[in-house]
Amino acid sequence: MTFVEQIDKQKLPRHVAIIMDGNGRWANKHGKNRVYGHKQGAKTVKEIVKISGEIGLEYLTLYAFSMENWNRPKMEVDALMALLVSSINSETKELVKNNVKLLSIGNHDILPKNVRKKLYDAIDATSKNTGLKLVLSLSYSAKWEILEAVKKISKQVIEGKLDIDEINENVFDENLSTKGIPHPELMIRTSGEYRISNFLLWQLAYAEFYFTPKLWPEFTKEDFLEAIIDFQRRERRFGKTSEQVKQKS
Ligand code: IPE
Ligand code: IPE
Ligand code: MG
Image (cartoon, rainbow, N blue to C red; front, top):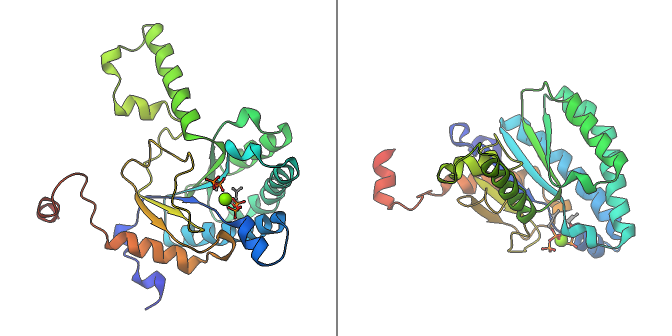
């Protein structure tokens, strides 16, 4: 049976989030510079977006650049921004053709102007699409996002639009940049690192985690499908007992 056939389409996670890590180490392993690794990583992105659409995934969030990544050497940051622009240039048509709707979360105010414009043009160009929602986490930090939500909610309280006692999980969700997006059910991190690196702290509260030693440029669609198959074998208990969960289904 192929990997695709092993997937239970009725039990697909609605939302998969990926920390795409290991481009630099992959390049090092192949005697190339880090930027070459990022370019190779962009090819993996293409493949994973394609298979996600094919299996009918609703949401795919990709951690492309963290707020902490601004602290990398300028040469690498510039190269990553240039790669982002060139990828948007070469892929927007394909996204439109494949009915993919592009969204993005993160602190976009600190993106270079040309990058921000490209990003928003691509978001506009795909806004009518109804297939896979592809969420790029760009210049993203979960702590930043949570603080922004706190500020927005505080403002509503001060303005008398919201009562303190009305603040609940739904209100909080509505004030995050992921407003309207279901929380990821599966979070994959490549490259053998076991950490969350300031990614979707609130939204991953009950996600299933899948870690693989594969470096992002060598991560294949089969690896991706394997992660989903692994997810489908797990029992999600949400605090209940296994017996309770089995009774329900
Ligand atoms: C992930 O690969 C891409 C970004 C964080 C932009 P890395 O560049 O972090 O690769 P490693 O972790 O150094 O191997
Ligand atoms: C996390 O990877 C961010 C992205 C994949 C964009 P990093 O390589 O920046 O994470 P740390 O620094 O190893 O935790
Ligand atoms: Mg890394």
